[in-house]
Structures are given as C-alpha cells and as structure tokens.
Length: 159
Image (spheres, rainbow, N blue to C red):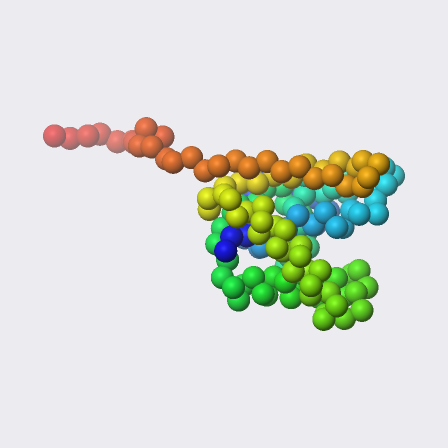
C-alpha cells in the first residue's frame, strides 16, 4: 500500500505556515480543516495552509510537498488512530469509535491519490474556495531516473 510523507526541499515551510509539518511524517490532504472557511479566513499564513498545504498526521502542521512511499498495514492503522484522536480532541467527535471510520476515509482518500504513482512521486495540492465549498486539485511530479550525466565528477583521472 502507498501513502505520502512530508518532504522539504528547503526551509520555506517554516516561514509560510503557522505550524510546519515535520519531515517524514505521514500526510493527508487535510481539506476537511477548511470546510467551513470563508474569504475572511484566507489571510496570511492561514491562507497559505489553505491554498497549498498538506496536513501531517503527527504534528497536524502543514507542508507544501509530499512524496509517495510504501506504508505497512500497522503504520496505516496507526495513522488512522492518530487522525481519529485528532477528530475527538480538536473537532469534538463523540468518541474514537465514531471518529475512526471518518479518519479511515480521509487516509483512504490519500492512499487512492498515491495508488497509481511510483514511490518518490512528489505531490502538490491547490485549493480554492468556491460557491460549492473547497475545491482541491492535485499535481503529480513523477520521479526521473538519474543518468550518469547528471552527476559531477571531480578530480583527476589517471591511466
């Protein structure tokens, strides 16, 4: 099974999000966070999280890029449990038992996004607020095979 992990190419996420996700944590879309937002909510760092942020499921911070990677069944179940706990603690779900199916749906949605892509494929999200609610679009950047001509070789070659 495949899911996505938060990745960073530089330190910019530390500057653009109130709470950046940790490199390597499992990530989901997290679009549910914005389901009742209005234009008035879309300012500053909150706007950046809305527009381009994936949600980490350990810190519940945001990240611009995620990469597809394999996940073990036990890890998958742990991600669902973390998200279910978050739904109880932050969103007022009545119990873990009630929150687990919704959490599983969110994690399954992310797994579906990852399913048709090779490991190391990079994903980005773009959200917009519409009359019908939050609209998400995804971009997939497939990994390129590295050729020898992509590496610099330094030093002298002796016969």
